[in-house]
Image (cartoon, rainbow, N blue to C red; front, side, top):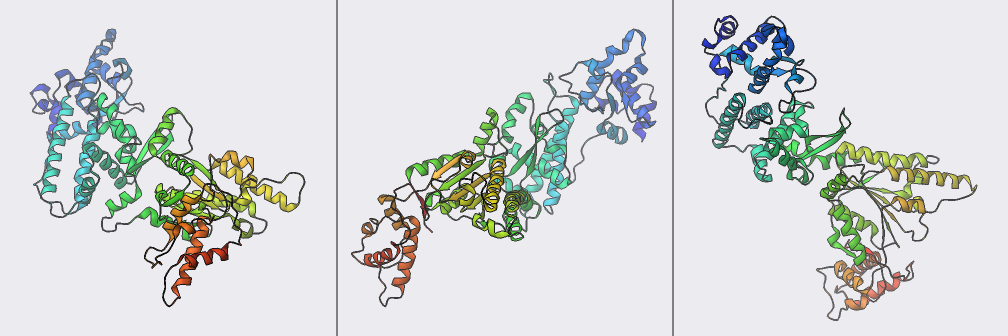
Amino acid sequence: MKYLVEFLEAEDITKLEIFEHLKCSKDEAEILRVVIRRYVEGNEETTIIELLMELYGTEAYGYLFHLKKIKELFELGWLVQNSFHSIRLGEISSLEMLHASVSPSVALLKLLENGNIELVLPEITPYSDHLEYLQDQFLRIELYAEMGTPKQGHAVASPSASRLQNRLGLLEKRIQERVAVTSEPIVVEEFFKEKELDAKEQIIFLALLKEEYAGGEGNLRDMNTLIDIVSFDEYDRFKNRALLEEGAKLVSEDIIDYDEMLNPFGGITRSFFINEEVLHNIIHPQKKKKRTKLKLDMLVKEQDLFELIDPKTTLNDVVLHPQTREILDSLLKQMDKKVAARLKEWGVPSKSRSIDARIIFYGPPGTGKTMTALSLAKSMKRQVLSFDCSKILSMYVGESEKNVRKVFSTFKELAQKSKSEPVLLLNEADQFLSSRSTGPGSSADKMHNQMQNIFLEQIEQFEGVLIATTNLLENLDSAFSRRFNHKIAFKKPNRDQRVELWKKMLPKNAPYAEDFDLEKLAEFGLTGGQINLIVKNTSYRVAVKEKPLFTTEDFIEEIKKERNGSFDNEEKPMGFLNG
């Protein structure tokens, strides 16, 4: 404690070796001496007005003329402020600081204890593992956070900022040198190369990673703090906000995500975090796996309501009427996060960070409603939680209304626990969507109406993407019609579409007769589902032949067997993909 005692007892403080490190005037050093004396005597905090009155007295309020010296000591980094509202030196007047409470900074205490505050770097050696590498990187983030954004009105960096900049430069050089001599891959460095992150994106990622390892909700998650540590001045700060917007690489490529919450002043703040799968691969580099997907799989196994589906085909595999395809393409574009950000900027309300969509696919059986729903989900890069609505009445007698709520609450719980955004697919939703009974009716009618009312309520509150399929064409309750913002008709294919469906569904490697006529098969007014069934039945028929060969007549025979079924001839747009 030699330097501390000398600092407290010296007759002429300017003669001390340590004075050169302070980079301040004699009067400012005397202010620091009072703060340090009070600190070692047990007063951790000192108000600025008490400090100045002790040094300069109260006559004619002369102490007020020394406030600028306190401001300089803040700039130099020797004093830190302890009150609830932090001081922004470039934005406040000197008088606003008068009743603030101050303490000696860690840098000042280290200087008085050791005689210097230089960063001592050990010999350059390879990193033994990624944890040792992260230890250096986290120290680097601490230095960035300590530097913050240079104060407004100061074109030249303060001495304290220069010292921090020097320490940071030495550390960054050391990290580069150690990485260069490390033979084993460092998982974070490999990740940066894979994602092609620039220097500022890397710093933001490392700051959030530091928070994850700290295990708490530290202030490095805050959007403004993250912007500060990668910004040089206010203009740079404004420009760097783009690094954390919806279209930025870190967000759009699902490297990081954020939660929005109300702050105490009524505004909305964003708290960022690293996505679970990315974090798992960094923390456990030897156990790489898609945790979100696996976790949702495991959660679904623990309940008996939903079937989890990983769609295999996209909208490019679907045969659609041009108008239907246009609607679905438009819907797909609306799911882009850039669109959600734009709508939010305009003030269009939304319940979630992405676009909410409630969709009805309606039309005759066999026109590909379910398969198109799965393909749409695949194009959106989402999994599907599918529920067969025909089961709702048979689940528990007398508890149908309760079960309707359970479907939606369970879906929400699965999505939240897995931190994913699956599509909710309600298949065969006819009984929910049909017109409700009016008048007294039977107890069954009352139960059905109550069940529909609850369904209507849940649709209204739903967040995310919901697709309901129904065979109803004319009997859709108007109340439900208003709740769905996309109503898409699936109709029987025209001749050109039937040709395309036959081409997609015919076995690719099968032997065909020389006179096989696909155009003739397309003349039959079949749905996509019927064509799929006929192709399968014909394949079984031909496979048992002694000389298997597909002929036009084989298919026509199967068509004749099916034509007496519930086929109608109404020509409407449809959607169906190759099963």
